[in-house]
Amino acid sequence: MLEKEVNKSELARRLNVDVKEIRRMLNPHHGTKLPTMEQALEALGKHIELHII
Image: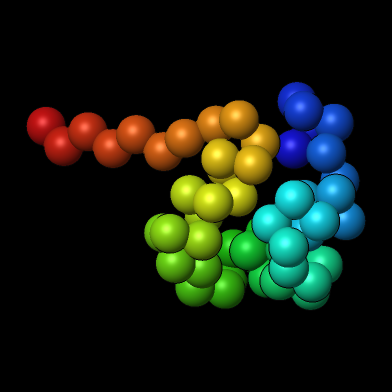
């Protein structure tokens, strides 16, 4: 978010969710599901890549 200069309100707007949901996603103690994280990262021009070795 810092790299893209996007604040919580702007990310919420991009994802069409309430700012409260963004706060939950950013809380390390909240169990945000992977598809939700993927959507948020996509809105920031990023993606998740997982490698198991």
